[in-house]
Image 1 (tube, rainbow, N blue to C red):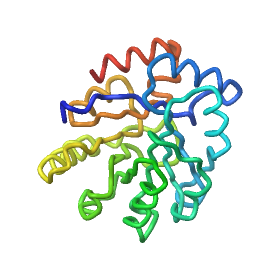
Image 2 (image 1 turned 90 degrees about the vertical axis):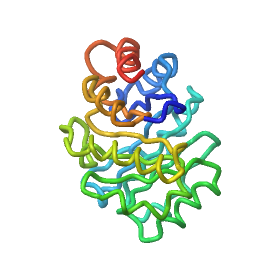
Image 3 (image 1 turned 90 degrees about the horizontal axis):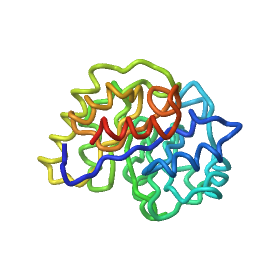
Length: 224
């Protein structure tokens, strides 16, 4: 892990109570969420539909926590204009979703947000070697994207470690590693040991029995 990067939690707003989204956002804010993670799915790149720009705008009315926008959509470059991107926000696009990845990452930065590239479990790290100058973060999917509540793909733990080593050896030690998928308390410890520093937390840790405040503290203890 890169000791100079402080670990943080990016709660998955897809897993929050849709009828009490404002309440949950305020609770997460008080509990120290570093980002709010928004899964944007189009039913094409992944077999599900989820959140959209209006949800992000609504949450911004009750919290200033930056948005962590995960675009699980085909041709994400066509949709960037839909989001009111602000300084501090981060936008992740999948390497597998666009043939013009470098151009898309550059457009995110030009819009004022941090740029991130996401990788599905089966996508090798070599696919992003040539865009490392254009990214602020790499999102490692530790499940196949599309649905909450899945089991961890075990091979992704070694992938996190290989990515951290690759980044550090290539002069990109400042690039963060985010993990998304079955980030349970137990798995978070393993992911942290492998080199992850931003944890997308959903039904496996934050939105489960115990309550938001207690679960956020427990997860924080696991990754520190």
